[in-house]
Image 1 (cartoon, rainbow, N blue to C red):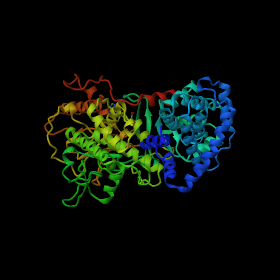
Image 2: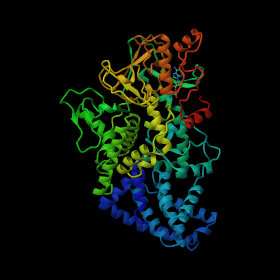
Image 3: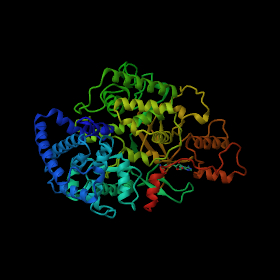
Image 4: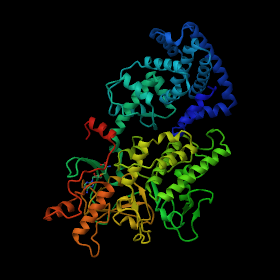
Amino acid sequence: MTKSSIVLAVASVTAAGLLGYAIYFDYKRRNDVEFRKKLRKDKKRAEKSAAESRESLAASVSSNELSPEQLREALELVKNEPPPPGAAEKENYFMSQVAMGEQLATRGPEFHLPAALAFYRALRVYPSPLELIAIYDKTVPPPIFKIVMELTNLDVRHPLRPLHKNGIRSQILAPRRLARFECEHARAICSHLYPQRTFIYSRFVLPRSYTLPWFLIHHCMSPLYGVIECLSYAEDLILAYFDYFPPKSMGVAIVTQDSSPQGSRKVLVASKGYQPGDLIYKEQPVATVLDNDLRNQGTYCTHCLRHIEKGMAIPSSPSEPFPSVWCSKDCQLKSRTQYHSLLFTLDPPLPPDVPTPPVSPQELEERRKAQSLFAEYLAKNGNAAPLLAAKFIARQVQNETSKLMASAPSTEIDYPTAEGGDYGLTDHLERLRFLEIVPSAEEMRLLTDVLQHALPGLEQFVTDERHAVLLGKMAYNAFGVCYGGGRDDKPETDKRPEDVEKTRTPYGTAKQIGCGLYVVSAYLAHSCAPNARPSFSNGTAELHLIANKPIKKGDEISVAYVDVTQHEGESAVDARTRRRKEIARGWRFACKCSKCIAESEAAETPTEGDVPETQKDESKVDSVLTNFEEKEGKI
Ligand SMILES: C[S@+](CC[C@H](N)C(=O)[O-])C[C@H]1O[C@@H](n2cnc3c(N)ncnc32)[C@H](O)[C@@H]1O
């Protein structure tokens, strides 16, 4: 173990978008002479105090023999030390304690306790204790890590307070930014300490701000206690999501409809009345993808999907593996900051002042190769979902980075987001329905290679299961983008109809030039006689939802996911069969809209080839979230 292995580990674990504090420490340590001087001074002081604790705590006792009393005594010693007063002092203290823990750890079993105490002191001031515990687990020798965990458990003095519906939010954490990450250790510890609580799988929500140590030290004196408080906050957040989203200004709300013929589901309802032709809302996508055959042509903007006049396009560099063109500098910049740089260029994915180890020419070459292979796969596969999913991940990374690093390019959140409550892209995605998809192992490997070569560690966030669900959400929710009557030149496909990728569009996927993921419109139900329609009348991927019929306040808003018109030469029965089949293939439910119900009641015999009314709805929602909400009696 090298002297700075934990600090480096902190930097690499946080690379997946949970950046900030630890990297800042490392940066200061490397670049600031005064900081280093102070560090040395603090280190000496800390060494002295460790020596004292060693003496008073029978340093010769090996870790295996430590009794709870000895641990308690050791803990009291640490707790009686005055906490470093300011942010800078805490930084220094953290660094010196980690360095000391690492030194002591190499000196044999009799130094296990002092080493653990040093690591524990660092943990007490670290802004994201669970993250540090996960790093300790990987870097600190197991017997020492065990003592650190025992100290942590002993340090939890307060019982878990009941869930405060508003108290915690306003009292302690309200304006702070949150970041999510997974930590098995945290779950294990929390479940052990509070077996009566339901922990939301292994995901934890922690405040990511300089004020967290403050909160920990001044409010409860324990990192874990803070974590538990934050978990309560997380539960609040989960339940309150639809109070904040969508923003009121959009004129719609999302409600749970229990008694619809389709069973319990979330639907979009009007918050006020609309007349035919009224604009209900405008929505920007989180990510867009051009149709495969248009990607190489330079005639549509890769970002906003606008048509580009000949000679007016701004092209990507020929050395980049994914050919892109933009209609404006603005789109080029947005595309690069949101996803393009990370996925398809060799640019550093983090802001320039984040100290990252120098990248060797060989590593750059590997990154380029990973991107080329992924781009080749995307072109060969032709579907939009894999690229939408990759862009979504890249955008998440970018959002988290810019939240935490002042120097990161600022991201304009142009898609609708929650009005309050600190929700991010993950929150918007996790409630959406998805199709069960089995992605190819090759696709998953190619994507993770791209991520890993951009930011080592990032690939860990894309497990097989999460990748499948992410793809399923893209495939289920994407809307086709079609304007000016749509295109007529889409190449014929030799895929079976059931294998052709579907997007929601009443104009027919053959007409679309691309598609996008829209976090509010994703809640629009399908109807064969819809009361609204998506329109892209400004010639970009901005979705305008337009009323087709009079809509009253509280009415459910629906659009047609497929072309529901009766084509020339097509009988009404054939039109019904076609649209219901397309719905069943694309979204895996049998349409039970008012039109279908009326038609089926009128029909004397079921039509051959029609989708049976009894077909099971196979579209899925995240069961973890639903279970949680159900338990809380919200559904
Ligand atoms: C509007 S919801 C999607 C919103 C939300 N993500 C959810 O999970 O409830 C879409 C789902 O509602 C049901 N649905 C929508 N339109 C329907 C229709 N016309 N007939 C039957 N079921 C429908 C299907 O289960 C479909 O998967």
